Image (cartoon, rainbow, N blue to C red; front, side, top):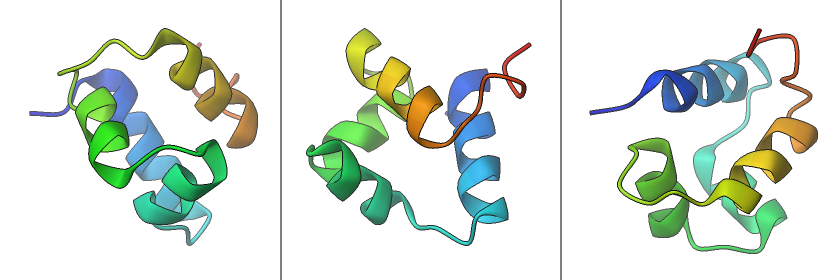
Length: 62
């Protein structure tokens, strides 16, 4: 089950017409690892920070 962060990332990806796989490639991680982070199975704090910057999500997380 996705957490709030994961849901917001997915919504942002949808709005930007971008796939999760593309984001994983930009981050230099596997799609599976990204999926684990978005489903809160792994912490990935540094990756979360990179996601926020890459997708310009600062406003969405307030």
